[in-house]
Length: 434
Image (cartoon, rainbow, N blue to C red; front, side, top):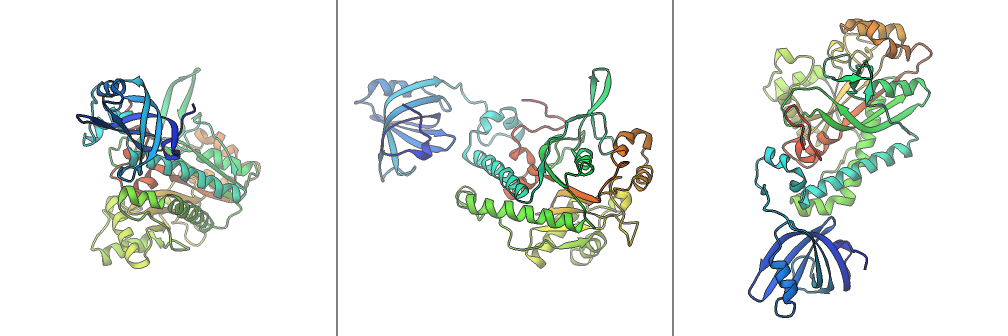
């Protein structure tokens, strides 16, 4: 008999498999909740009728894995799905030792036993949503004729020109790094004439931060498009992408989200996200929120500034999203293009969602000599960037793009306290196992 997922159970003989979530061992009856990847079902055993099965169940512990054959019947008195399985055979796949964590264990302890921590309906649902998010992103890109690329994660180039890179100890006698992002390679794809590309892949950042939104390895959606006049076209692309993703998530997962989280799943009801220049954001924060961004962070927004400007945008525009634009060019990466009408500012933006930055985007400098000067302005020796610069010697279209952090986005979609909760196995400065 083939196994049936619990969500697909129909009346009659069935075979299911999963782990024991709950056991009630009464005097004459046993009630067991069995959970698999699709849901949970009650197993009901009358001890007098099946003493062998009753003995087997009495020996089980929570989270033991079993395979069960039996009759699935409707029963209006069973709250869990309105039906139950009356077992005729139980195969014990493995008996679990006493669990080292409970649901209320500290986050760090739960991360030590992440595979047990993930045996939870809410957590499983969040990873279903993450899977769907990537699916809808793929649908959007392919409908717009984007080409998918897979860039190398081992490179001889330090992609951001900074210090937050993991250097490999020995790559066959050469110096190599884990890529911080596919930035330089997706730009190469523009020189190849690919026009529009995307990648869903891994980032590696040697960032020593211990905040709730930083990690050293994470998954992102990267995009690059050619023949643009400003970063406005990049922002428009990201708007369309997120509207497509979020509203499809709401349509297909909204009911389950409300059941598990007790509130409506977010949707996007606006056609365009507000755009606010950084200088204007400072003025709004001071005037409307009585908050001044610390001088040391001028040229950007600090976490409190991000939170307050999003609060303002929600109140004024009823939008959970806001583009912050026109950052000082000296505060952005060397490949950011200067604005034509004000060279002190960059053609760039950050996208904030519910108080957190989830994206950085920009138009890139595609002119060889100008790019070389931008590298020098950022204190980088152009000689160390010759391979990257060579991409631009043989013809380069105007282009720009963005990188969207999936875990950061989903952390806010589910209103979680940390990216750890939506990362399968979190990596940070103090977390290398399991």
